[in-house]
Image 1: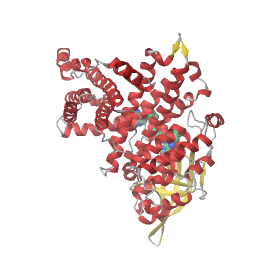
Image 2: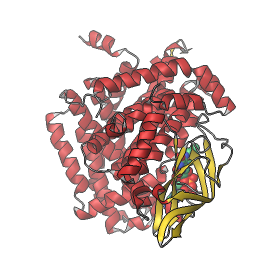
Image 3: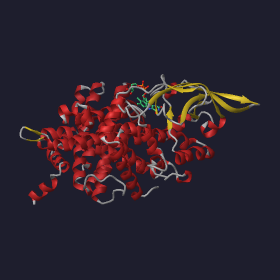
Image 4: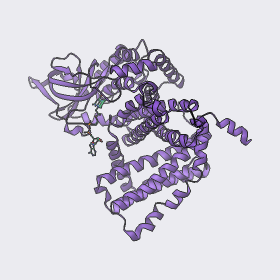
Length: 558
Ligand SMILES: Cc1cc2nc3c(=O)[nH]c(=O)nc-3n(C[C@H](O)[C@H](O)[C@H](O)COP(=O)(O)OP(=O)(O)OC[C@H]3O[C@@H](n4cnc5c(N)ncnc54)[C@H](O)[C@@H]3O)c2cc1C
């Protein structure tokens, strides 16, 4: 684990480096030229320069042994600079993950030490032209080469699609089918029969290199099979999903905040109808404040999950999916709203929010699309619902009601309403067998994610109030502001869980007309509507905080 001081120093160096080497004009130019600044990526990964990759390599292999929380902080910071460059750096994190979880001690020593000492760049080769969300459809094969009855190597043949760093990496981890099932192999650039296509002409993250790979009977020695046992590939990939999805979640968070942090200062200077836009409630309360609330709800969930992974609670794949889904969707909404917030200027290249919006778009696609996240969340949480006979989310809600008793201002009571509504909708879905409709299953995933994040943000606001937030946690907002943000988000989550719970239950034919009043009662719709009281004054307060007017307000009140 690295100390808070070291983490802050790493973030500071990253910021200083970006200020010098990647100012806006350079980013706009590289984006227009569709060019990956490979020397900058190498500088960032070089151990005697920025050495970002040292952070995630264990100390025994020459790294700094950073934990999940540390890597989330760095990923958010990189995303705030440029999501293309961030993707290129992350490709080494991702590419080496199958090694970190599945390799033999000798393989770990060889490859992780090379990353730490030589700054070698990795690419992660899972996706294929016919196998995207469904990796089970994998067609690349690794045929054993047998001599004297012993497997001495493999011949790999197939195609990989959309591989980040595909044209620039030194080393590739490639998923291929062996006779015993999917397995990871390490393939070095320049291997005979191994080629890459030209870089893809992409919508966004144009500073990252993405290329298709072709493997034509590429021979690797048997010691390039990670872990030395065939058929472990999908298990190894799964083992790090919680962690890797958190990193992409951090990208969504960083991208969303990068856009808002341009819209907020812009609106203080842009005068329309005699006053700055920042003073127009119809502007701040639509384009800025709700996006801040969604991003901070997602942050809360990311931080909670990162702490739990670092505490050894397992890979937390479902939690990673919730974090990725919420943060990347929130990042996209925030970037889109930021274009609107800058009006015509936002629609031009010069003001950057347009680029950020194109860049952040990828985060709901790679490392598992939003729809796959919804499915993962719903399926996993469905099991919890069944195992607890429908009590899982009621129990979580009760814990939040207890939190409300000690911390009445953090929105825990409203988050509890969201969770009760989710529990009731899931039960309705079970009785009426509504999840035979795939759409209902995925919508449940969305409602669960919102309700879980509302609970998490309420807990975070309470920890902040008790001065118990972890040392490395983000502290952009103080206790009062975080509580107001939590109440705003909890109201949105509760309204969504309640009204959409009703919508889909009725829409899927799970409720007859005479059952409607009972449905509304079970979903606690009157209480959810009542909980909207105070919303505008909370939004006013958060806008004041964002625009530095809160202190003035407090003085006036005094
Ligand atoms: C810029 C970029 C960089 C990338 N980098 C890498 C990398 O480094 N390494 C790597 O291995 N991969 C990489 N990928 C691939 C990425 O992970 C995949 O694109 C992603 O997993 C989706 O797969 P797909 O594109 O085949 O879409 P598909 O799986 O065909 O999905 C298309 C649409 O259908 C939906 N869908 C899919 N299945 C279902 C279902 N069962 N039910 C309902 N809806 C469904 C999806 O949500 C999506 O909206 C990258 C992709 C891009 C664009």
